[in-house]
Image (tube, helix red, strand yellow):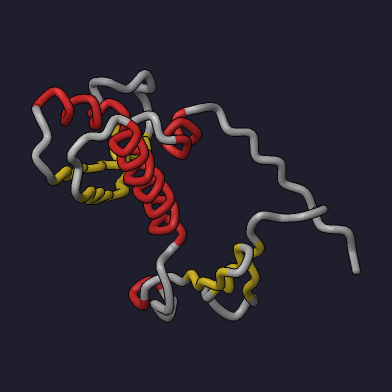
Length: 145
């Protein structure tokens, strides 16, 4: 790959992964009860982190541009698996689905209209749009060294 945005390295003896994203070095792991060493967030935690950070940044940017009196944004997220038949708003009705529950707390002297606008903007962050769109993941082996 010419230039990757993120590189993840690990060895086959465990779950611990070294992640490099530009100048940033992170770790990923699984919790001890799943056989990991709990040395970092698990992959789903990183997925939620990306969505939560993007949502908060998008809300903040919009509020700054519109000069709204927003003070703080807190986004709490949870990933789960649900039966498709239990999801009234879902098109898929068979099997299991991934669900992300996201709760957004906005503080500051906002009007009800401003709060509604910001909640509408929350669903328009780029990561949210990516997760809701068709995603094409191209997997291929690296050339042998």
